[in-house]
Image (cartoon, rainbow, N blue to C red; front, side, top):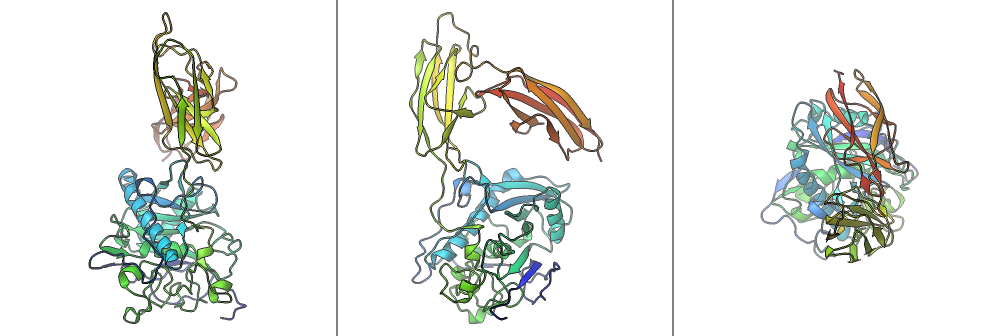
Length: 500
């Protein structure tokens, strides 16, 4: 293909050999074998002459590298897909998914590291925690055998409409399409317009079913698996048919390489234990840190330039908070002044005695405190929106003669009154699975938090519209929040959905 030609193809790939014809139609290629292999001893052996010093330390709980506020910009979103009628095991499987995501992260960083650079998938993380965000999505029966069903389930939730997202779905079932991805192939070099990056018209989806090699030992275990990073690379646009070692099917031929289906008896890069988990054996087909001027990856699509990757080893970590001045022990006054600080510029959010966190500033003055134990918590918030996941805390006891009993008196900063909440109107469309609620407070400046059934309270506004409600009985709870003080007796509305 001449240098002036640009290939733009949208396909769905099941990882195997076999050429495809350029087409805007989605096609699937049959699976060939398993993308894993047992190796003696440790799977990781440093490349000779490599600057790679080992995987970058993951975030909390085994999560991969985190960046920014965890939600803005291009992100790869991890999804746990459970089959309809089967248990939702997100509580136990999230740790496995975070381990695998961290291994994918290591594979990318080691691949860049042997070329003298850094690279990490730009994962969606929980704001303020650096923990990998894992969405739980119910998938239709047969999703492990049909990627289209998985894509349709995500589209039904509005997820694929986002052009700044790609989705990697761990399907909690075994099936024929256990390692498969969508891909848009476009060898034009500009990330802003490339169809697999800034020019994508909808989010792309890849799935890993259980028999595709779910992993709990990470990248350093006795089994090397290249399926996960292989599918992520397809999502990023590898390997274009115009690449020097392309086999024409979205893969390459110069083994060992996570994206290649070449001849393992004539490997260009060795040893297997290191090379097979890494990307672009010769740094000349789809992933290069510094391609030579005029080379293929200098003039064509280089996935290293993707906006879905971060090219640094310095994470944008959450801020830290300290309280250098606060009451302690037992005091004989119902007032208190606290001073707090952070290691980063930005703002603060405060909570007194378990109230919802709300914006505050240092120093914070409290008044009207009732007798008993009080706990003040504060967390810093940096300009990117990252919150300190471990707020600073101060605890003291108020003992004022003739004062309010424990639990009485003022509860918020500045002696704020406790707001009251009421639900003014509830309109339920029982057969359509929808409801609309209007609510208010006696405090005009109060905000609100809502909870459906047993879910956590989240900020909300009136009117509140709920859609896609499941059949059965439901309870909506609403509480007003004023200056960090929440209504201790939320207003509630009980209703029933009859949709089939």
